[in-house]
Length: 412
Image (cartoon, rainbow, N blue to C red; front, side, top):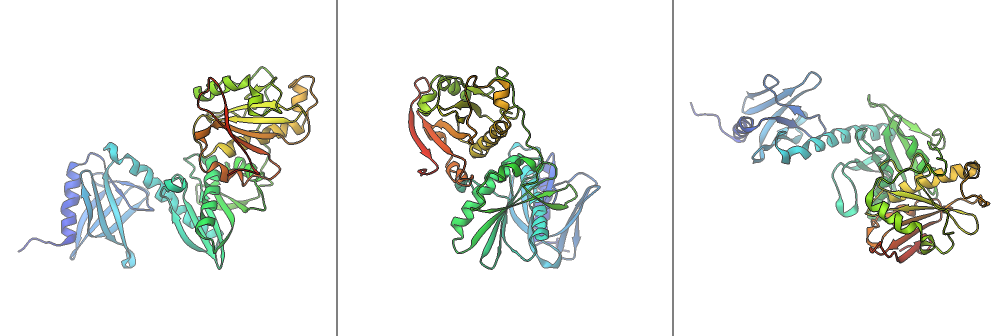
């Protein structure tokens, strides 16, 4: 009797070669948890002219019909499959012990969370059509694979949506959400994309809600949702997001600088504040005055006062960062919080000065080539009452020079 042959049996031989040469074989299907192919926890069995692969853990069972090989290389095999109902798809077998395959673990987690995000959107925006959902990077447009993003449409109206996985940088989702909203508006000029929806793990939404409270409501509507481990979602009101987490340190209790490049830049600028803005008094200047600030963000925060008694928040960054505007906003709104309550005068900041009750000004200072291209787009989403200057410095920090200065009115 002739041996079985055909695409499915060629795939069987490829799987067996893969298993024989792998130390940590793993099966991954987009949108499903990665399954270790441990002895006794998988089978390859014929079913007529087809091949069935099955793998399981205590929580998950997966069974797929193999149609053929999509690609094969050392430590990795991609297979064509047929799902229930005849729908085509693919699965990936890879050796988790190989260093070059390590990114696939993260990709698997992103795909699984991306499917959860799809369910969230279907539940909260029933009646809207999901045009696309992606968990892939788009480096050209500064879109991170860490946050799945989606575009929904109903008629001529659209919604940009993004979700933060519980295992990642949760507070970074709003920066990339605004970039995604801006990108879609440029990509879909015939659609009125008026809203941004962000999904965050339950109990971690307050920082994002506080940021949203200081965005311009005329530029977009913002919807915030919290999700639980069980997959339940709840809409939150950004105006009712609890107290602002902040504490004003007494003068002299400034936090030590932890980031050498920013610390060097700060050292050079502390004694030359009028170089940044002639309205600033040379002294005193305080650094890291909020207990919230400086938590490993790679940004140093300075607080100065101008000759009219108005506070000025100065954010220093020595390298590109998508998050610079919103991290600066974090510090700005905490300074404003303490200013409204008279905490600076009470604790002895700026002795002998009558501080203005006007909101602080905000300066973003960095080497001229170290402003991320998206910084200006994000700044435009801030409330108009927040005065923002971007100051580009020469890279010769020993002799600081200002190469450009853009305010929100003349940026770009």
